[in-house]
Length: 361
Image (cartoon, rainbow, N blue to C red):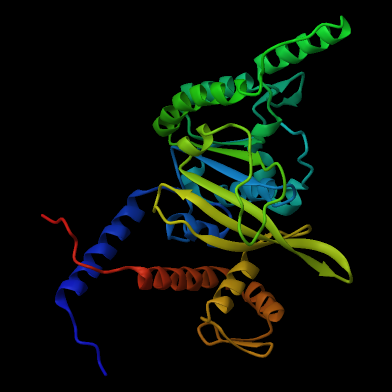
């Protein structure tokens, strides 16, 4: 039986879609490197994080936090609207050993820079005051930038360093020390972020702060875990995103990558809290094609019969692995992203109440 049309509901839908399209056109979004994460953060495949914002990326060890940040850089260098942006990677942990040129391209290797240079060598932040000073200088220059702090947990504060020195000196003399220094960094961070956020907005820049969890996250429940920085990070972040390794990808009994669950636990852009998955491989990086294929299969957009998948929209047929290779060989990545975005938007539209607004002019 054909549904009877409701002109009020149809008008609401049309106006809602029009407002969303206008908002997207006026909002410059920074691509995360993952189509599904873009959609989870902004409902558009074009990008996920707004400029002038701070994003907090949290996860356990080897969950893809650093990899995602460099994938973001790789997407940014492909877009002309970010040609004048400085790309800065503050490797506080001194643990980044990616083959940047192989995984992310020569442009990323050429454009990504450390916070400073000392005696011809990259100089990264040692204490939180170093990081703050660098951010202030960047904002003062007036030039837009994307700054990745990897990670906040590896930063000490001058107060902490002084306290540790005092404790060691007292220990040598057999004396006791009083007071704590564990709360120094959260207090300092609160003061710094209050100032930084307004400067980020003025320069249309992005600050991505990476945080470590104290132990692994349960990928099924995303149990709350501790992190350094206190409540300041959550309060000032436009997006709070948790990563957790859910499974290992193996070949010939050897681990070659991992499946990562991603949860957006705070979203000031759309207000929606969504969970998506993404695959990462040691010799490829973030597998965006594979992740999109999995999404379309899981949502029933692409029909699967045993191991064979029919994709009428792209004129393809085969197993998951063969479809991925066919898409890459035929250069259909953009078509795949378009289809993924359409499926996502259709699902989100189906979730709307579509009721008459309570307040209207």
